[in-house]
Image (cartoon, rainbow, N blue to C red):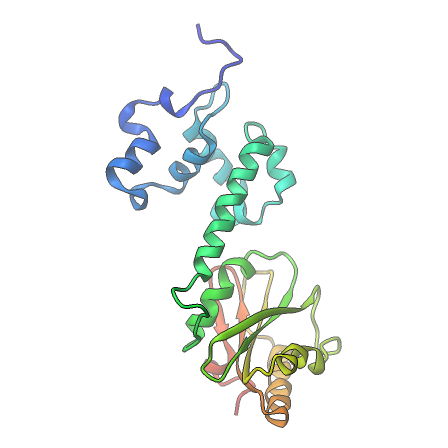
Length: 233
């Protein structure tokens, strides 16, 4: 009989079902999310092979977005995960985030709302609090820096226009793109979002720093206020 202290490893699966072999034979894009996670986890637990453990993890957390959002401490405490596997999962997620913003050029160039969203959506869509960030751009719309200005519950009374433009002025940025997330996951702009956008556009004109857009980030989707004509005349 199998020692009850032993874990169920990928090698315990039939060779045709092993995620690692399937990746080698078919490529990573052919694998399910659970199979990719199983490769990271490497071993299951008593009564549950590694693929079943990966499937349960995704089911319990609500898919990849839930895994992305889950605190490291909470993953460490899960049966069959622990600090080592939790660290591997978080490291893989962070590599995915960095890859999503990588560019073959030294600085990403923003030519559309989609370009800006691609730099922000992966991370900001998973945040549980509201964050307001500003992309600083040069005269060629290349990203100089991304600055976080506010974190927490946002409303127009607490947002100071000068704070949003502070780093843009310091770095002599030609333009900015403002983005904030809706933790609810729904990126529909509120009337307050539109009012703030209008104030930012007007202030930018006075300072000769163009506000190119204001993005509202939700879960796996976003809204461009510029594209909607909200706050921009």
